[in-house]
Length: 249
Image (cartoon, rainbow, N blue to C red; front, side):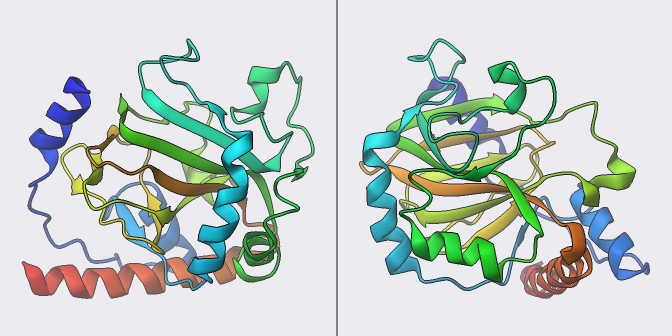
């Protein structure tokens, strides 16, 4: 945990400056945000039935597999587990290339996903995206950590980022003494029930110093015919956050 804890200590108290949106169209403003030009996280104004989600999250206990952690031999993280509610299969938590596919496969609701009806309903009917790639429970054990890394992919065409699978991160159970830290940007202010777009192209790390597991959902969204609706929501959310941050400066 030492490296992750040092990363947290180094970047946790960064003072943010004011980052208003540029005078562009709604779609161009959304791209500007997602390209990491503004605040490195945006709290999305979306509501869901948190108590039901917390109950449904308990159904995942029997399905978790090690995700890029030391125990699985895939990484330098500790206590990081995952299972898919939408994807290739419940235990297929990594990118599709990991499993020998020549092209991106068709994603479906998994055995677990079909049991999590409230969560499934949110993605099927409420969140503004046409379809989804992976939607996963991501659990970080008490005392666990995710080492500093970024999810930059040189294949991503940043000019067309709205056509790429966009990750959203939703906190179901987030202990107080657990921190997702972004390099030079401080900590993402996660609390139970909060949904964020996070700039994962920047280096980031997570450390769970609490005695409780942290459980989130990460969903990779293809906007498709919901692009304008999503852009409106993202820009509205960004402006609300900017107004709040500006008052703190």
